[in-house]
Amino acid sequence: MAPYVPAASLMHDSLRTRGLLPVNEPFTALGHPPVGLQNGSALGASALLHTGPNAVVDWVFLELRGADDNGRIDAARAAVVQRDGDVVDMDGLSPVRITALPGNYHIALLHRNHLPVMTLAPVALGGGPNTLDLTDGSTALHVPNAQRVRSGVRLLWVGDVNHNGAVKYAGSNNDRDPILIAVGGTVPTATVNGYLPTDVNLDGRVRYAGSANDRDPVLQTIGGNVPTAVRSQPLP
Image (tube, rainbow, N blue to C red; front, top):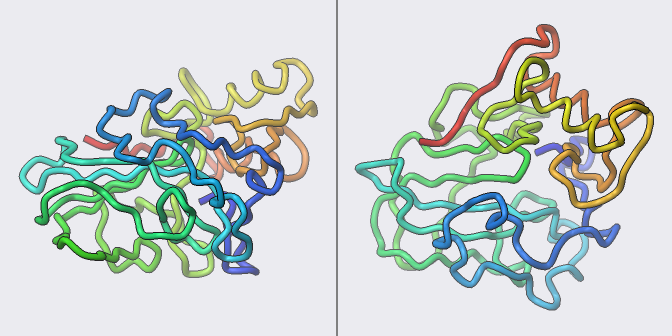
């Protein structure tokens, strides 16, 4: 994910420390189905108080998809990701609880402005705690090169500003223009603060130009050299 800091082996939690992380999940507004609200719609009172590796970085969305049909969502819910990469429940610490029958499922992980990932093969889930590590490359995903690798850690690709399962820097429906529009559309050095899809690096501030801007990561995701390239990995 964009906030990962290799030198610290952790993500930064700027949205939390700047008081911008919303208490209520953002995915209903993006069109995710109501099945995703299984007691995962609002953070607990203490969730934003955790610091260090367990500090909350942002919201994510988990889906359990059919073993026989990976386009069918059998269960899903919002959750949050910590600085150390753990995906946890609404208290910011506990394992995520999803109401579903034990069995085999394709597991998908989504974020509001990163490309989604899904396991290539179904994963066996029992009734107790289940663990899946998507950071070490041990789990095959639904498309080749589905993750960016930084210092040996696999991360979600950034820059899906319009949340359509693809990252484009140029052309129609690209992800770069909304960043310029967010800062006003005419002065590329302007900035705007907030919890916004155009905040690609999740620092709470949208920048089109200058240091730590949100435009460059979009170009890096598509390869960095050919601005007309596209990285596409939508879910079924």
